[in-house]
Amino acid sequence: MKAAWVRRLRAGWGVVLLSAPRPLLRVVGEAVDPKAVVVLRVLGARHVGQSVLEASFPRPAVGYLSAAVDGMHALTGLGLALMASRWRRGALIDAAVATAFAVLTAITTRSARS
Image (cartoon, rainbow, N blue to C red):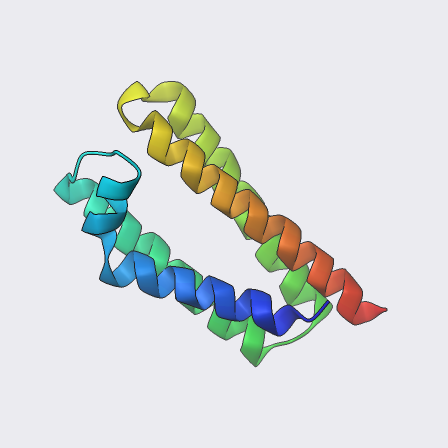
């Protein structure tokens, strides 16, 4: 499995978060709060930056570190879902996306080594 498509998917997701946070919040049923818009844009910048770093340094260590960052992101999303019922739905969706990126990145990194 090629890692490039996961990087492109991540970069695309980051661009969506950067450019359209308000419609995305509406789609998932969250309030369009100014703080939430900022958080989504910060997360979008992280995804774009992470995809650029993965492409610039295509080494297993970078891939596994990227997967670990996504794993930590998923855990913080779960923590937010538990602690703040107001943001539960969005946090769970975000945790699911982060988990998917963690798993896909780990799989493609492992496949690249084979």
